[in-house]
Length: 124
Image (cartoon, rainbow, N blue to C red; front, side, top):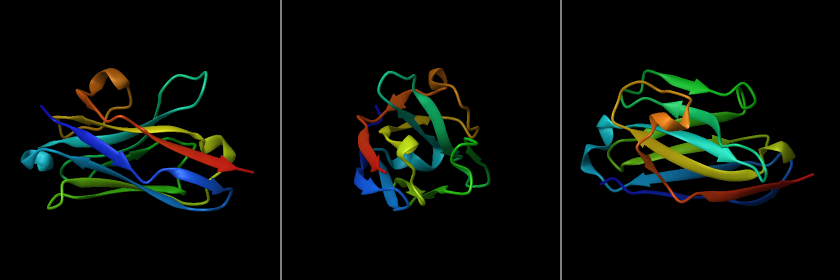
């Protein structure tokens, strides 16, 4: 069983930055592709960014391209989401999710493990 724990959320003003962390409780973290999703009130959960276990494939939603950057530290079993130039529309609960595959996919059904989420609120 893989446990994922997100941290780093908070309340910031538009234009600010936050870095989210997703720590996995598994030594074989380097065999997991980890992605970030978010869910705003009244909306469906949506894909934000994903980073393959090999580190050679990253995928971003169009709404965050150029502002968000995913990275990972396999030694520490942590994946990060650096969020710059935040906008009020980025307000949501952010979740990390993992799948035992080298391929990043954008649908929630493709992930076996989920964290509990961390709230990000961006004020205008």
